[in-house]
Image 1: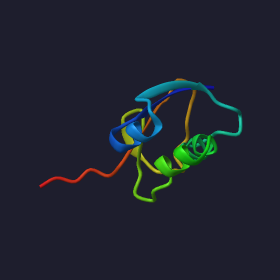
Image 2: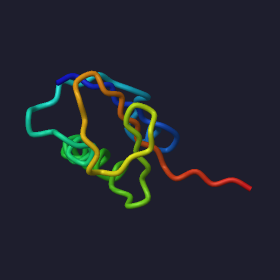
Image 3: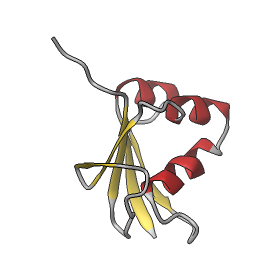
Length: 84
């Protein structure tokens, strides 16, 4: 399964990329699985994606870790946004 992963704000800065296209193993079925798959790349990735406040979206719709990922999906990771 191929997906596009986008990284925003401090996550982008930490991992050094704004996006990438990945061919995922069959074990990656949810956004949470994808997050864990990326975090397994090492400390930098684990730190960037490890915050419990990390926001996630699949196909431009906010989602939780249990949301399914399908072939061709776009998944985004970004820190919480605040404004004033």
